[in-house]
Length: 498
Image (cartoon, rainbow, N blue to C red; front, side):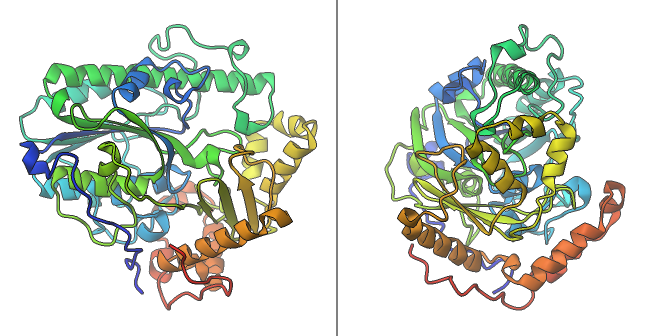
């Protein structure tokens, strides 16, 4: 089984109103990706968010309540959005700024496929996936992260120029810096009336509250409000172009908040994101509750854009869901984690959830999770707040600091994942079932870290590269040794049940 022997679960579905050419023309596609925030938007019921533009987009489009990224890290998540593959399948297991890269430059991706189908392609904002040359955008503007938030009006200005350049169908991929840290209270007068610590409470999945934490959360919401304003400017530019009625708009975040139990974790606060799809006259306004993943975006866009399908992608086209149909859908959804930078965050995990329960497998059980050092160094007040928290919360943070092999959560009764149920006799059958499904997915995907020797070799390599300046020039070896002999499968991996 080679590196591209993937789970063959893609099925051809009927297009929304027949095939794309029956619609008369290929639609334009506007893909909007924001940074580092979960579904903390008004349209998702958040009590503090001020997001009128995104709320309107959701009301007129399709809001997915249970949408997930593949990994709660910037480059890793973005690689899945653009290739339709999990990071362990495409190779982008860590940040591009630390030299991590896809295995192959010729990995199929969205801009290349749509370009071949006749689309004019453009990107505004960072790509953050290596190698950059694998993604043949015709137009590229503002190529860096721009976390200083310089010249934010340029995003809509460049977009408007792109919209109006000519009448060929376009694919524009625009990447905003909000709500990446630093959480800036106000930039260019946005938001007009910033929230303060007195206006908010900490996010529920933190499990703790503190005045300093509230100020961070308030400014996080200020970033999201500013993002909403920028997207409002973008959509106004699209309206002025006269092309809005034939443009599919997709909005999502690359992963959750860069605070406690969010980014760089496999918890819901890291992997669950907003996903809104707006397609006037085509996608029926509705709320969907299916388990959807960013691996579903590539087959969706290729189908809608009339591009050649890529065989054996692990995701599914969302087109039937956009049409308001009720197709048989996935019963289980998978996510993962490897590292973010290097030694500071290296702690590989795999996870699966069904309609109610979630299982996380920590591939280095019992070892100290290095990312907790980052948390306590950046937020020195947090350790004392956790120590004074109720036992359930204290235990959850201790578990995150030094995790066991498995963690099992009931997302219905415990949506913020504080109570581990792996030792609960009442949940033994659920635990066994999810463990088996996770093992089978790892075998079928295929997951190179099933091989303990490869896991150890990756750990040694990551720990040998401790500085970003070195990492940028370092030639990572994992693309060469990940896929050697067929990985051994754990003895508890039985046959797949679906």
